[in-house]
Amino acid sequence: MSAGITRVGVVGSGTMGAGIAELFALHGLDVRLAVSRPSSLTAAPARIAASLDRRVAKGRLAPHERDAALAAIAVTADLGDLADRQLVVEAVAEDEGLKQNVFSTLDKVADPDAILASTTSALSITRLAGVVEHPERVLGVHFFNPVAVMELVELVPTLLTADRVRERAEAFVTGLGKKPVTVADRSGFVVNALLIPFLLAAIRMVESGYSSAEAVDQAMESGCAHPMGPLKLADFIGLDVVAAIAEALHAESRQPLHAPPPLLSRMVESGILGRKSGRGFHSYL
Image 1 (cartoon, helix red, strand yellow):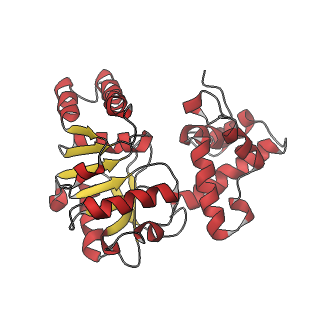
Image 2: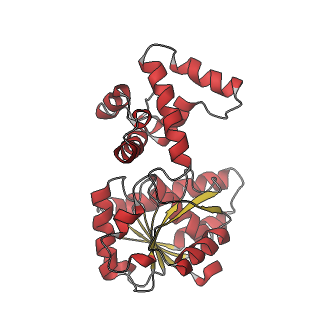
Image 3: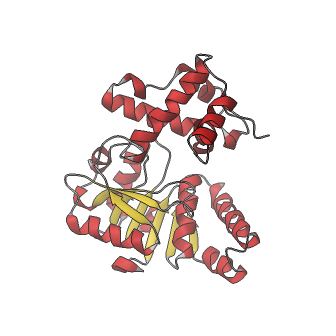
C-alpha cells in the first residue's frame, strides 16, 4: 500500500465507518474497527459481510476476496486496541463534542507517529485538532457515501497540519484508487458547501407549497440530467445528516441560505430520516 501504511483503525461503525473499514480491507490492509456499543461487536461485521455479499452477487467480487476482506477486520470496543495503528480515521456521528472526545482519547493511546484523521462532512478540523497535543498530525480525510463507489476524497489540512502528514495521506488515498483534492478547513469544505444549499432550496420549495417533491426531483433529473433529484439525494444521505451539515454551515456563516428549513427540522425530530427510516420526502417501504 502506498505511503507505507498497512495497519489502520476506524472509529465508528455507522454507514461511513463500516464503508471505510470495508474499503480498507478490500485493499489488503490490517483493519481494526472500534465500536461504541457491545451490540455493534457483532452487528458491524454482519453489516460489512452483507455489503460484501452484495458485491459477490453482482459479480464484482470473488468469494475468496470476500472471505479475505472479512478476515482482515477485527472489531473492538476499546480505543486502546488502536495503539499500533499507523492511521486512524474517526467516523462517529456529526457531533463536535463526541468527535473531540474520540480525538482526546486517541491522542493518549495512539502511536505518536500515527496520522489522526476525521471523515466529518462539515465540522472544523481545527477545533477537532485543538484537543490533541500534536495537532500537526491531524487532518480531515472526507470520504463520500457509498465509500466503495465514490472516487473523491477531500483532504482537509489545518494551518498546523504538517506537510508530510498531508502528503502521506494523499499517497494513501490515491493507493486506494481514490481521487484526493486538498481543500481549505472551512465548514462544508467544497462539496457540501455547494451541495447543501442546493438541497435546502429544494426542501424550501416543497415547504412553501411551490412544488411537490416528485416534481422537483423529476425537473432536476430530466431538465438538468442529474442522476438523482435533490430530495431523493437528501433522503439517500439521511435527513438528519443533511440537517447536521446545514447547522454547521449556518453556525459558521450565519447566512440564511444555510439555515435548516423548519420542515427539515420537524422531519428529523419525528424520525423521518429518508431511506434509512423507510420514509423521507419519498417512501421506501
